Length: 397
Image (cartoon, rainbow, N blue to C red; front, side, top):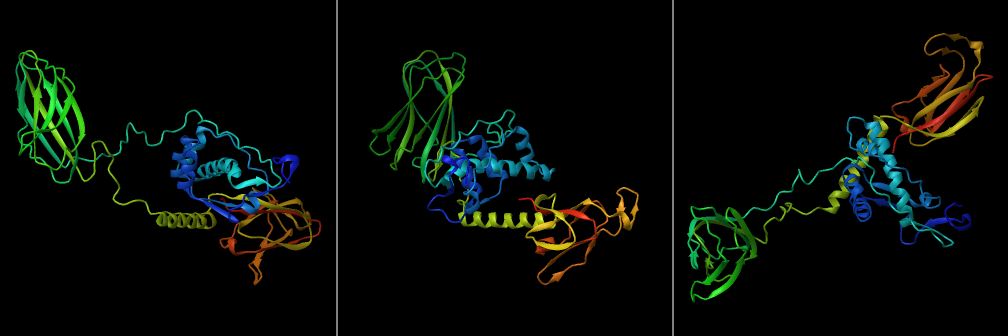
């Protein structure tokens, strides 16, 4: 039963999903880029794949939506404080799950409420790869022709662009930049036009109007290559005043590239490779969490234990044992911590047998054996009058 569904009714996974759903970092980043773009950069860079067991995830209420702060994202990006980073990852994963519940789950009796609105970014959020600093590389021209100086006097005139042999093989676009320099007697032509004449027939194939140039200022234009025919580029100048000296530059871009376009990666992303890397990351994370943990998470609590007995465990790092009642007849040695005698033993094992028993020496005791993940049973033997609580210690997610 749930609190979110009408009349506290049950909930379950929506049709069309398997018993488990795997959400990759790319999918999560794309999902939240459409709703909370400030979060997608952190998901893509700092969160691993998230798995959802819909049998348990969808039969309970959605996770509570925690309040994310700038400190959470600072911790998420830190490699020097792995504990804080793990806590931030868990908090953000809970935040994500509180919204994805509505995508994967529904109230079986109908009336599933609408998902909550996604809040805006917290203040002070770290800036990831600021585009003003880390600009993506752009494609370079396959050929550059620099021309000038070109002296333009009062009156109309035509000036051929020497050194340009058109067409360029594989050329797809070009960028033409004209600079109207300040001369001894600066002039301002009324019009500038870039023309391409047919080298054979002499007819103008294409005319490109350039904005009037102010002395000392450049005017640049980008156009598609005018065709495969042999052309003669030239500049025509309308009536102006005075004399000005011009320079120009023609940049040619080939193989489908255009000026300002980002450099294409050498090969497109491979979804299969990305999936394998995700699997490796999860496996390495699991090994680290189990074999070299930075911390642990409390699990099931077994309270009020007396006498002897055992209980089943799975995937533990160890156990925490607390004596709520001790038997001081065996003696006590003062110190930090105090050492107790004759309180009992705790032993971890499997169906094949047990390892060496661990004597209970302190009121609070940790048992963290190296091979804890292999054990499936915790046994305990307590002296008369001793009462204990044993808490399973689990690896961090």
